[in-house]
Image (cartoon, rainbow, N blue to C red; front, side):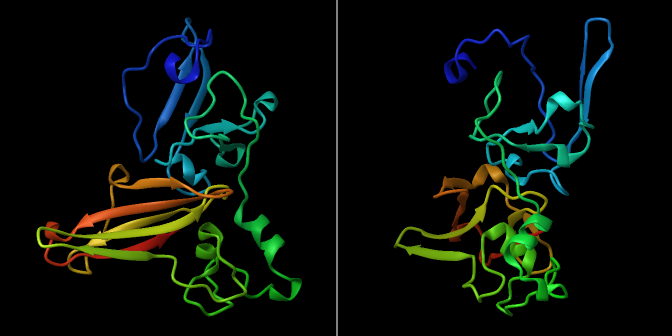
Length: 222
């Protein structure tokens, strides 16, 4: 910890357990057993998605106001991967879908600015345009990029997509299937996260064709 963040007097002890990726309740009590804080977090809904396996920590937007810590709208992402323990981030960010709609849609688009709508008819609904950084009013190319590397000994397919890390409430993830009926999210430990320009990053997955005779992939947004 000190090698990464430097010497700090804020470290009160070590936690030897593990937090559940899908969310759970975290409680902080004082020596008398009185509750200091109790937080129930999740990996979906309005919680900032880049904190779910992408290396960013969660920070209260305004801790001095003593907000409801179970309200995901009171939280935002750290300004850097790994967080900034013991000090506030230089900046916090997190644009909601409603804020994005106000920014990109003219007033006359009131009936086609919903998250499930596709006003430019490019196959990407608005909530996908939001998290993937597309333009909902101009047709975009498919967000998934696939490259195949073939050799005599092995074959590898690389699937990647780019997403925004400064937007909250909607997340994007890859799923795989061998029969197009049962789908499973790809373990984040098998994904490579590549920082991009501005508030973007690329998620990349390399898959050996030898792992399965047939394998299918899809990009999910929710």
